[in-house]
Picture 1 (cartoon, rainbow, N blue to C red):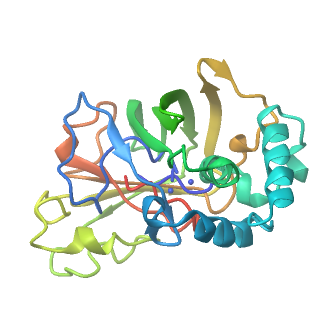
Picture 2 (cartoon, rainbow, N blue to C red):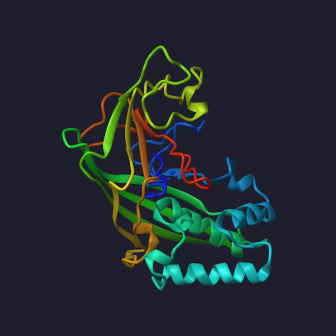
Length: 283
């Protein structure tokens, strides 16, 4: 499930996107009791494969700042601090930082302005803890537990986030797989399936795992109700609460989407929303 820009994006791409093993991963899905690791992608490349200067250059272009310059990094760091404290009005926050996808953009930007030889890129993991889908109303509810770990000076710092997200009536749609279209199995859906997941020989792809239904939501009907950081509620003015037309949730299931209880991990996975450009949760 990618939570795009709500995610305005679970990457939810929860960007909630941190909840379960993704269809594009080549690793086996975790068990129902495990948290799934999540990868951040920058312009189609894992951030762990991006040199820091490349990250600062291209990310700076995306957010409209010169991250190669020390003053530019300091200015952005101050901006991020003000966002974290709720000191910037919603109207004044650029769209790059809005929603769940924007939230991960903030975390990645924070990495870009602080990373040095004693630090490493952030590691995410998480799990959907509560799930509700009303097939009659096209609505639902999600709670996602997300963990961020960073290594600095040999010390691992862990931050825990808890997301509460509502999907308003008429927002969810379900698409059934077309069996004779290997390259485009959900032709009527607004977004497709990651290329890696379409390989019929990939034992973790949609064909081997028989993922034949897509639960999809997009737009302002995706509402972030609450987000906590280490148990403390983020202020109402935080841009993570803003949704727009690019907000997106995409989940693939074996069989019709369940109404309240998710199946074993092997029977569902997250797809990939088109937005944001920076964050593809790998879920």
